[in-house]
Image 1 (cartoon, rainbow over the protein chains, first blue to last red):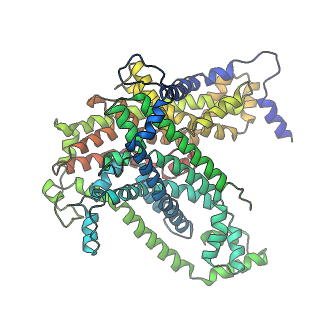
Image 2: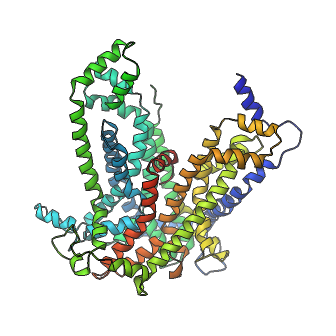
Length: 304
Length: 309
């Protein structure tokens, strides 16, 4: 009680009738940075999406929702949206499941735990370009070891990245290798928060390891699942680097994603800032809807 | 398994509750040690397989070009050579920009780390410790901004940087990179500051210290773990960012590493494999070193970090 009062007294400003400037001075640099480089671009981007702005065009004007209307008629944009959704769906199960599997295995009795965790985490310290180059080289149809060993195993895959039907799976594989370590670490933190006595009690009741996993680990990890799920969805809707480095959107637009289409629209071919801003906001809306849906579906309290 | 044993033994041999004793019996019944080493061996093998893609990059970078394109793949570089590293770091050919890009990335990343640490620590302090009108609104806005995907501000940010005349400059990369991490940094440090006991500050205040002195002499020295985690996080974020520098820089001399490497790949041919792989391996070195030194801290930082990948 005494402690609580001290804390309270320490934090409360004395009621003097005037507002102290001190907190605002502390906040000034961060707020300046935040307002100029985060808030202003966000608002300006929304405005731009209703204009015909272009690179180098000094004067531009309000065009209503025509940028958004044109997007609906742009087959390449729609195709890129479908590709992005395909990537997101295809990558979700592996990217949720593999790190969980590794985390559960690492969380059981095991020697050199920190070292092994570090090994799985290592790819996440690489840049997306380094990761993309690594897998491009590994999947090289002529001299890459991946195809060589597949041939030796009697599974001659046509080069993964060269076929429109399979190229996206090459990207999924690359992303899986990149981010598994990150989600593994998040899952490990969640697993360590589950009280051991629950497993002990289950073991006494004769539950198998598998049964404990489904009845204790999975339900109690729900908040962590939700977190990983939302982060993964937000990230995968913005996928760009892997595609840019490995396939440039090909073959035959098979891996063209929204951000790549946006990048090309704004900075490579048309320099159409208005149209690109509209794409960004459509993507934002999609991500927002998905995130809210996930919160609704997976919401719930972990109680133990 | 280990944890179970530890919990039980720490409960002491004399006062052992019956439930615990039963659990103890169960765990003793299994050949724990054997299982532990089998599991360790399996996971170690999995970890080696997991690292093979990057090992292949390093092996490739150390081979002379004729060996690089040899089939079947050779995992041991029999004719060890440093020619590709020499080329990307020191030669004046088109691949030579990697050395320069390494320097650029270092400047950008360190600058961004410094800016993030100063601004977010200063902002987190009043948000954790003072009461003032607008506090909750400011904090809610910052946290809410974490939900906004970076790509939404890509085009308008380009226009802003262009208007400031900052395209292809260090500040044009440092300041936006810092802006991306800022909100998260404030969130992280505020959480940490909230857990620092206030007694020390109260004592200092009685001794006549002002808010700035308390912040610099008490809060910051006590916050090394959180500041370290944030520094590593911000460094990784700036060192590895690709999309923003790809559009904000158009002078080759100003490219950071990811952009230089990606454009090197544009000149993709069998002679380029060696230099590209050498560049890829080099780009991994700084974070690998940080990672070796601060493995535990990075992992904890990532666990704290949450919201950004």
